[in-house]
Image (tube, rainbow, N blue to C red; front, side, top):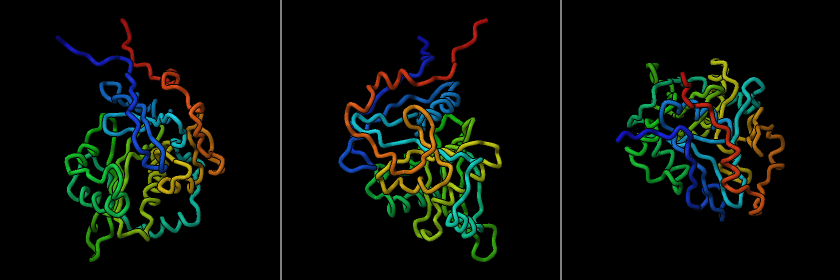
Length: 278
């Protein structure tokens, strides 16, 4: 018997688990598989509606009593770096950027382990082995790139060691920063900020209007840095809007403020992926 994938994506909900961003809360995700011939179109469409990619899955927070997680992106045409961000660009002018196909290396994994140990030792990725890391990098059904940042060579050679890495998806309207990590010993260089600034530069060069940053979570120290960039907008109440004053986006936590899953799914706009009859 021949089995085929369903034409319309099927959506599912994860079981509640402790929230990694806000203490004392539970997170729940709405997700769908990202596979088949129309994976790129689905990724493009759902990214514009607040979804994120993890390997071959697209997901969006759908917590039962919290709406804190807000998808954020930078409008490239309106972006202007702050004084401190311009200093970061100058400080890292010696870094060499290298864009490659999504292929994991031992050097990347070593840097990833050091980053997690220093920054997220108690996070959900802390126990990832090299095979799981390779899956995170390589299992992508869409157009993805690994952007590496190499330190200057100490003796004037071609380049030095790996300083930072970002797994990036290329959407039809921008760059989506799936996951990034960097050398924790180079904290004074603000490499996390530099990666975002450089992605804005790449998007400008490619004529793409947005850089998708992932989720911004009001009240979470881990995610507060995203509000420090200009021209940031968030996906809230079904539409993109200017971030404005971060203090104006305190999360609603009353259970009745969250729409049922069935209504959330009903409002998702899907790309037309039905075959044309002849």
